[in-house]
Length: 97
Image (cartoon, rainbow, N blue to C red; front, side, top):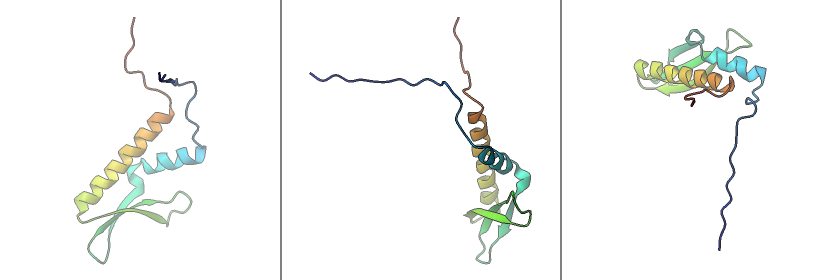
């Protein structure tokens, strides 16, 4: 006879994310910190501005069209916004009485 043991996990503390990481996520989640540049091969590269130096940019993705590049930026912003929402704790979706 085989017994299966399961365990459940409850949320008893918020995720531990460093302040440095949180600051970076907030920075990346702001569209004003992004730009699109055209490369010599005709592709478009998305970049976000570095926190430490205003004249430094970090490349993220390359796309064939400017529309695709902007969609990539919007998707990145959405991704990091969700990460910031997650670290603030669990989201109650339904309660029972």
